[in-house]
Image 1 (cartoon, helix red, strand yellow):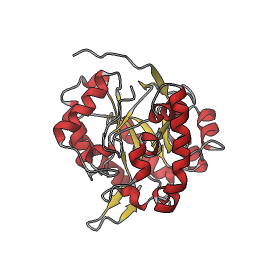
Image 2 (image 1 turned 60 degrees about the vertical axis):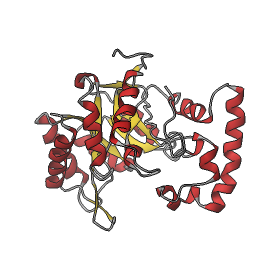
Image 3 (image 1 turned 90 degrees about the vertical axis):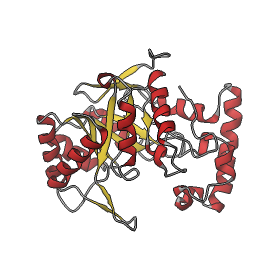
Image 4 (image 1 turned 45 degrees about the vertical axis):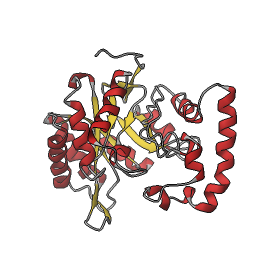
Length: 296
């Protein structure tokens, strides 16, 4: 099957990484904001996105945990590997009780990379992020090990997620950072004063996660009730009192979307897409009854 409706391609960073202007966040396929989908359905969503022009797929070893990388690996078997850019992450550990710890030790970095390569069934990771920053060790030590993985051909490009301006600068001095992943949407604009200008100064691409505000702009179902099984239950913006107030924001977006003859989700995503050629949002599975909104 040939790709249809090709999506423009852009560069992330200045090291040569080229991706589709719109990526796909795979996290929700294995549960978080919603219940997991069956493997066959998850693979179908990924392949559908690819044949609509999306070539940039984002996952992490902590999603599932591990199940998300395994699912993406199954989908990759049905796709031309050389046309897909795989991004995954390391750095968050969860114990049997679900408690999270952050780790950036060099030996841990290497072990995580080897494990992700195996689960994904690939020979290299196109973009490897440090998912969260371990403040107990120098960032230079973590990036130093990632640099070795690049030199060995196991990783092509390095990224950071949820990093401070100082950390980004220090990391970039050890090895060029190709992308920084942060939350960015009409509902979350905290990165605009410092992170965005810094990335543009250093030539680093920006990958906004939750560009549709964790599904808030996905449909009325999200504004009316959050599923009991959703991790959004613990998010302040989705608490009963705040959600009631935030409904007014959604209604305004819905009204504006009608004027432009599109959905609120498409309008919210369009805003992020228009923030620059160096911005590649990664919408994914929506926490609403329809599960997946085709925004391509």
